Image 1 (tube, rainbow, N blue to C red):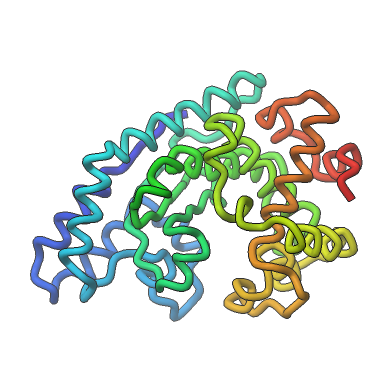
Image 2 (cartoon, helix red, strand yellow):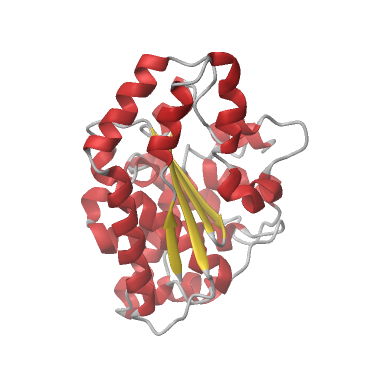
Length: 288
């Protein structure tokens, strides 16, 4: 598998050197290496700039430049390249050959609204289409040290979705296992301190509430229903999800603790567990 890290820091800086009237088309061109992914994901009539959280043509130019400077100073794209190589090596060590010729990766500024950005502490990613990984970040002291782990999380989705391909009628059990494997894989490579807020911020009563609600819904299918159990009521509303009483990001956290229970009981690595069927992970973990 060849890994291509597209030079998006320089490309985004070049956008800012253009007159504002020319920036929209230039921002859209940033997505050209990911066109097959965009074609699959983008609903009709939705602005791709908004959909993928990209910098806005009329956004705060000085803040954009400062954020790009910070990413460049941190060697962020090289951090991402090394994370992809490290993740690929961990999967290769299991004996599994990843059937992807070229993996396209891009690191983008995340110009999300403040409330949405706060939920994820300023960074997020997408790796749900084999061959394409995007990470969005508004860099700060808290999220920059977790960038490699975020990339590893998204890389794990690449493998998992080849083992258990995505379906719109995905079950709650399958989805929480997918997210739990991805975050466990990131923790395995980068340590527990690199775990994302989608796990660390769900604890105590919120974690137990999520565990109980999800335990009764493991067989529920369909993204519209499942999203509420994964993202929680607040986030799922944006996808048309119905309130279930699930705390924000509880599905990620429950999935992580489920997979951790499976790893303890089996002695497997997270890389090895990535190749195991969801039903077996749920059964053996005895987390519920």
